[in-house]
Amino acid sequence: MKKNKIIYWTATVLMLLSGVSTAPMYFTNPMLIETIRHLGFPDYFRIELGIFKIIGAVVLLLPIIPTKFKEWAYAGFAITFISAFIAHSVIDGFPASIFPLIPLAFLVVSYIYLHKNIATK
Image (tube, rainbow, N blue to C red):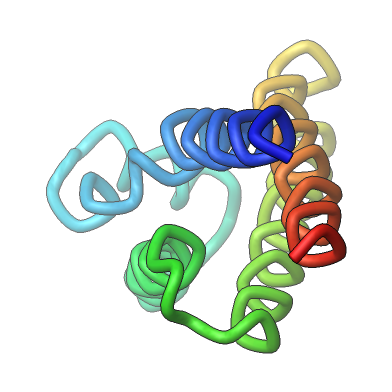
C-alpha cells in the first residue's frame, strides 16, 4: 500500500512539474505567449488554459477533493496534453511534439495509482 502511494505522488508531482509548472508563465512570459500565438491560438485561450491548469493542479494536489472532481482534472489534463501533441505535430513537426507526451505518461501512471490507492482503502 505504501508503495502505491509513493508511486502515485511521484507520478503526480512529476506530471505537475513537467506539464503544469508553466501555467503561471502563460500570463507573463513573452516566449510562451508567442508560442501559443505561433500555434494559432488566440490570447483568450492562453489565459483560459493557464487558469484551468492551475485549478486542475490544486484539485489533484489536495487530498480533501472528492475523486469525482479529480476525474475531471485528469480528463482535462489528458485532453490538454494530447491537444498540445497534435498542435505541435501539425505546426512544428514530430520532434517538437514529443514534450507533451512526457507529462501525459506521468498522468496515466498517476491516474492508475489513484485508483489502486482507492481500492486498497
